[in-house]
Image (cartoon, rainbow over all chains, first blue to last red; front, side, top):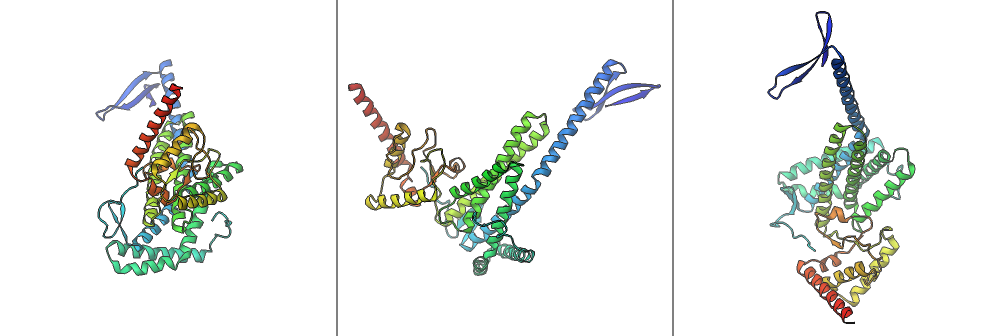
Length: 110
Length: 290
């Protein structure tokens, strides 16, 4: 998306990638159509930048709390594992089972 | 936990370093336990029993985390911040048993924190729907999925621990929407339930269900427990671990494991429903005859 110089005049081209991977350029000339397309593209780019900034701001905003929660979760997992292992449990395909206990434990169903 | 101030639970840097070393040691012991080395078990038990500061540190971390989330969600609104913190403690209390140890309390806090994280992500998504940030909405959407997974995992951990300790977490919607029972009311409910049990040792599940249905339909309370009547539209009985998330609202009360045992078989539930339907039909016939 750029204005390109051709024999001393500015012409607007919009480049895009086709599904087969090739880059194509669309010609808009240097008149009102070109101005309009350039304005539209600039607006789109601003929106994109704003969007990215919003994402970064959101990530920064939640990063502290997220970090604390992750750390707390890790401690919880570690201590849970330690406690259950100490009580004679082991992990079988993501499920805690008591040693010597076959099959899934019965679930209460109401 | 809620009674202690934040300053009380603060640890010095030295203590933190010592705890970090201890946790590393636990990690090493667990790594050996994972390989099937059962000789490590006595050492592991000793480590957990003799290190109360491990739990203190985690409790401290939980407190920091809840304050961080409350601050993040409420912003400058201090009232909301306080409400979030109180709601967090109330929610944790509904998830764990009454005589919960540090481990169960910690896992309950983890569930409540994960839920808070999910709610925050959902509120951000709702806000970004009003904005024109489409990519942000996508990012938040992915975050919600991750939060849901984390919440589910936290629930599973809590249930695994409760199962290992013989605690059955069952919640029954038997109270009004105004709020949960306070400790005094809960103690009174316990006493009343205990006295009822001694006079009538095994109340059938069908009776319990019938009473709940009657209460839901007529608005009059026939239950033996001194609990407030349920609100129309609230769930009756929920025990499955899949829908525990839906069931664990602060308005629900935790029943004792004995009450749970009474409500175990699917057949009994069906019987209860059948009886209720039959009784309703009889009542209608009588009314028509009149």
